[in-house]
Image (tube, rainbow, N blue to C red; front, side, top):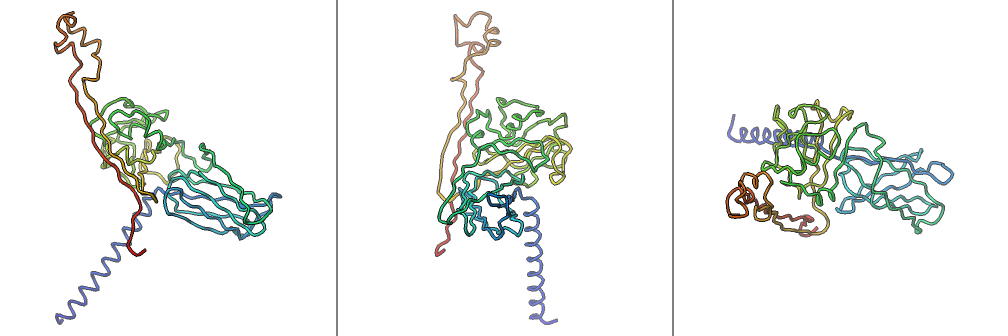
Length: 318
């Protein structure tokens, strides 16, 4: 075989290998997605189906929009939607435009919306604000979603989002006030299961090793966590992989606007009061010599620094 022929064969083999690798990566990414879907019916005030209505759902934080058209029964479905807040807009000839803002989609939990259009001009708009508390009627999962506002304002000692699972009944093995230097360790028991029987995921990707004793491969950062979903019992077979419960962490993504923050979280013994047991060990000398070791709080200093930057990806010329 000539040198030129060898190069052609090698190049062809490389292209085939690259294509196969890309396909495998794309399939894996799709399977590990925590995306969800929204579906429903569009009808008139008499309950008749409206076919051909345009349904658009747009993210309220990102430049992301999906469009669908209702079928002859007035039904539509839009899949592969990331969790977050969306605006739903429905348009049909001879009817007022329907706009619902603040529609929240939770990770991997299908949402439904039934729209009743009012007769009128498309230029007229009926505005609806979605309720912040949505009932999960299409999921068999008995779970709880801890939202971003809760993650931000709950005083989470050690700032480990895995401990937020303790907000769900049936979960124990620690405390929200428990301090842990290891952000990757939960050490939780869900409905009596062993620690290693639980599953931790990041954006749908498995984040535990076999017999990992509940330890996550990655580090859960409270500032990059959008929400935490805890599943404890009777969840759908699509979740799988665990005999106990599931802690599913959804991370934040960039938005249409630039945002940034810097922070320092500090703990220091100088800000603490001494404990009763240490005062007792002072043998009554704390009033005479308060500088004795047992007369002061146990030495402890912890500083956690960090920053967050997010925003759109800008390509020059586009």
